[in-house]
Length: 204
Length: 194
Image 1 (cartoon, rainbow over the protein chains, first blue to last red):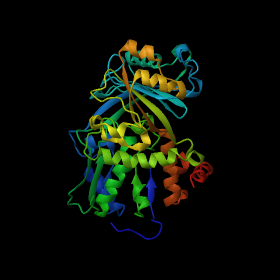
Image 2: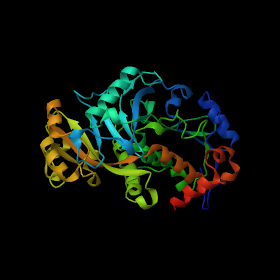
Image 3: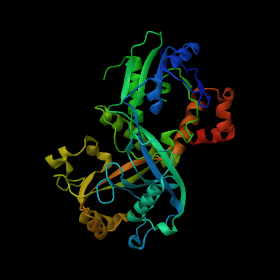
Image 4: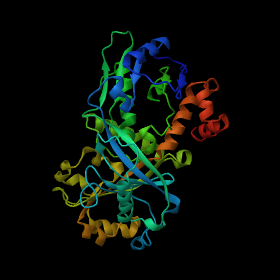
């Protein structure tokens, strides 16, 4: 990989609509596109693409409340500043069913779950009930707080992150960067620096 | 973006946009706090990421919608043997070695508190958290309190995509991106980030 002095030419398409079925297919495309390195950042997709048996989806569910119209219970009267609240121990929460509330942009995200191997794609009725109860416990006047959305996602969980170069005989260097679990927004910059250092041969 | 920062030409391919509902990062709470990421490099990566998010969060004039620095409260039944510490005393107590390494970053103002201490502080801070008596009735007698960035995930993904494209490519050649972000919107977003 050659560093360039001037603005690099780049080629971006983030809506190709094309799904790949194997690492080899991605490496072949990389060759066609005249890339000498492939960086695999496919998250849960790596389970199938690189046949990684260690990848497992850790299901998370959220209710989204309107942050700009979210009354709090009477007991919180006079309190004016939003805060994040997390209870991942009983009685309100647990490791697999933490109770939390995260004000984010225009919503308040109320969670949650961390259920490895649970592939159910939508919120279950029992989960919706529990999340509303979590919101009430954590201070929201649920009867008067509009729910504006629901979310189910699958954290790309792995015993350890895979951020390493894989030896390849295809002529295309291959670096993996996936399996960051529930910490994508917490580690993304650092993991990207790691990839860049691997690519450029820097030692840390 | 890290590769672009290092002047490495990048070809990026994704079947769906970063804002597609199938992308886990869009719906994430966006909280900065190491959670279920078991790797010996996690501490370093998380602090490198904190540096970037903190900078954005401290600069609301330019990135007001992307990162918000907020107080986090983690409720606990017991303190796991860690005595109460505030930002003024935390460095004096060896007990703090029992806490995760990331808690030592000074920017976070990390404190291990009893709920009474939390309640006293909240007379000033006025955080929207359950009152002391409710916490005690539930069995929560201790809490972590710290400052942390919250990423507005959808906005961050959109702006990063726009920034990336306007920085390193001629987006006029990318039909997909033109459909996602009309040029006027892209230009507006990019202008807010310069």
